[in-house]
Amino acid sequence: MSEKGEVDLTGAKQNTGVWLVKVPKYLSQQWAKATGRGEVGKLRICKKGNQGKAEVSFTLNEELTVIEGIEDKTVSAPREHPFTMQSVGGQMLAVFTETSSGQSEERSDGSSSGSGAGAGPDKIALEGVVVQRAECRPAVNENYMRLKRLQIEESSKPARLSQQLDKAVTNNYKPVANHAYNLEYERKKKEEGKRARADKQQVLDMLFSAFEKHQYYNIKDLVDITKQPVVRLEGSMGPLVITLLMQTDFKQYCLPRKFSQKQKM
Image (cartoon, rainbow, N blue to C red; front, side, top):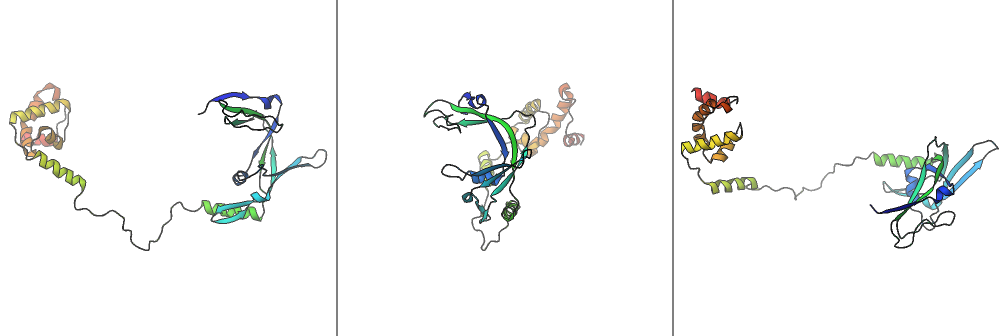
């Protein structure tokens, strides 16, 4: 985030009042397309009678009414937009502007709120306090109804569509003779070779050491730890179970049913 300087409170000192107006999305998008002086339309304020309410309306410039890109069609935005006036509702709202360093922004009174080129942090200025809220709504006419219909049709389109293929897809996954996982397993098996049977006491020592660290093991894990065949391990489990039961530290363990049944046999 860029460095921020002091806030310019010129708008507060001049007691500048501003309007907070809610506009349709398409209208703000059309305003962004304005070129030249940036004139987007005309605001008309008229009051009927001495005590009548002021009627406010906005007329969009003719060159900004063309909307492109909706279903590859060109539609015209409505030009007339009457305002619905609303009260501030006891809220204190203000409008701030932020100008990047090196840019200059002219106010309506002719003063400049920006700084010169290459001058330090960004400039934040208070433009004024909100004195009136309003909502800008388009006049319901043929152009507006056509625009809304196209917008609804565009938004209701599914994000993904099924498509019928004229020919088979050839760049798909191709079958292989053997998968990489199987090749890795075969390579590891050849490197380890045939498991040599170790001394029975040596196997028991390794099993005791393993069960001192953890309570339960899968038979495959014991094979990896002892580097012994499964048959050799199962033959050594009988004496191991009896020895573990005799030790106080292992009496509370719930031994696997498979080993208990083998001991009874």
